[in-house]
Length: 69
View (cartoon, rainbow, N blue to C red):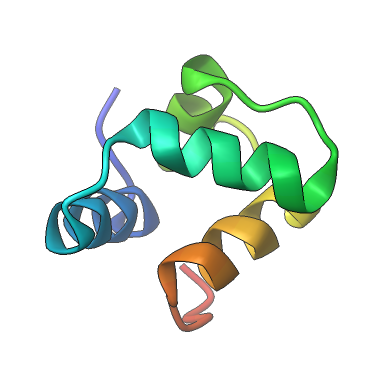
């Protein structure tokens, strides 16, 4: 499964911040109190899953602007 444009934004921003995916997962868990793991993040990045609260947390943590992707 290919990354969506949103998934690519996540990967690029993590590289720019020099942070691993595990860091993002920890940040999402802390901010939302929701369960998040690499599988959930992968599904979000490939468009298989949409969890608005987690996506909003990812946007906020990474400083991504909402582009309706």
